[in-house]
Length: 377
Image 1 (cartoon, helix red, strand yellow):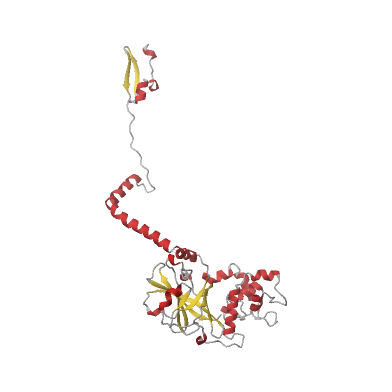
Image 2 (cartoon, one colour):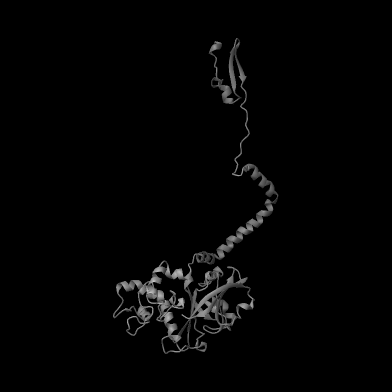
């Protein structure tokens, strides 16, 4: 082979060198044939490590963390496993209560829940019936100004007169007409449009207000029975509209009955004030319970911490005389007490209601107590 015909580039290196990857070689020709000379190695450059926005080298930072925590790795793993296991166990045991707490976080204030976005229209409507009012609470959406069983807002929905208990003067109160599906503006039954409007009215609450108005002699000749006439052997009803709660109101005879009674509703502590009486009426309900008990009222008071001043609590009691007595309490505040703190029982300045539940959820360490005062319906 003529030296001038020898390969002149690295791409023409002998195949054996390329296959074995033995460096890079320059092939040059001289008088004796060819000479293989290893080319200069590519200069190695230090690897540029990725950096975060503060300029700290990520790899070195991770190595730093490993040096710090490596001696304690075997120690830290046990608390981590315990904490994780406890979290799973706690969440599983109290999932209904925790879910209810999350739901309660988004509960709207009572007036917003009642009115939605109709507040402006409502104010304009009711303003047409009143020229001047010294007590603006009388015009509140949840107030029953004319004691006919319909709140002012119910009257707004049905377009009845909020200043007259009997808008059409036929001798039947507007609330009774709503319960009977008769026309509050005239003879006969409800029109199709009125029937649609009636779907926005809580008829159960209308019935309770009517019963209360009768029992407390508001617009009737029936006198109000005192607590001696209550039939304590028959459960009443406790309802909290904001939290969508309605539960049996049980008069427990003594502490030995608490456990069983709490599985069937909320309990009245014996010896505390009865509905309507001056003193503190103490009512307890579960915030959580053992999952294997399948208690339908295990989370009945889980969300009472979301009650705000001004929210309503209703209590219905049945009398020995066959009458029904309804009471309305308005929330004034809340507090957390230890189980043996007597101050949660002894306020006798007025007719008060304390709703109580074990707190925090899943424990019996303390008591969450929501306080309310007796108010007119």
